[in-house]
Length: 94
Image (cartoon, rainbow, N blue to C red; front, side, top):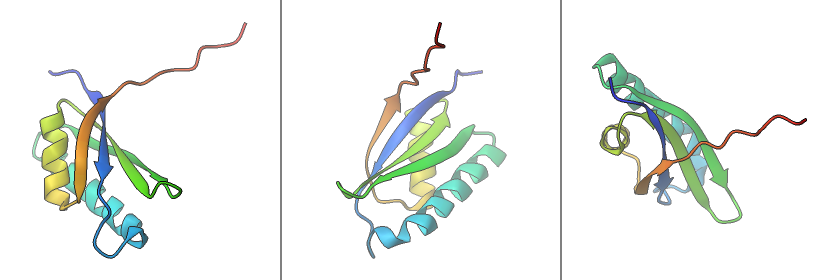
């Protein structure tokens, strides 16, 4: 079994504007759940919207960037970039 990693998807500004963000997020979640039922482990984790920059990122967990791209394609999301992300845990205090 492949190791799962985190990936970010940078969305392009959607038709109709950022007011559709909840709808797009629901589409992203449904597409990843559909792929998982088909045996491709893809999990939509969360969205991060930065209104000041009018930028939105989706965070996925998957075995490959190609699996994430397929989830994004199925959700018909306007995207610009898929990149592997690195999780940095906060260390405990002494």
